[in-house]
Image (cartoon, rainbow, N blue to C red; front, side, top):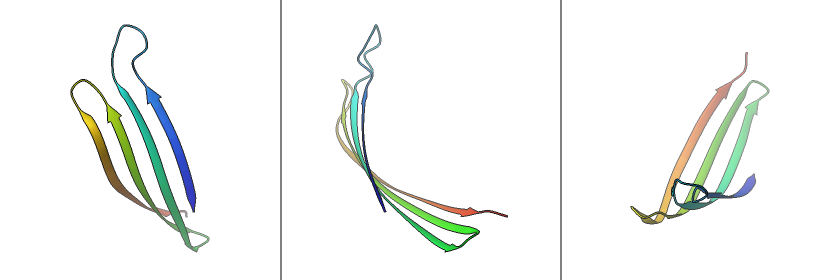
Length: 66
């Protein structure tokens, strides 16, 4: 299990790209030494001139090592 926080600021310099703050909750399940299943839930707060609000996503990954 993992918890991550990140913040991006693209408003520096000549390009005004907005800001974003992300929280990620991740779970990894090792079925055996060669197979891993990962699941992440990410929620983001976005502040940009074209869009401001919250976005959430669910990401999954199945990894084989052989």
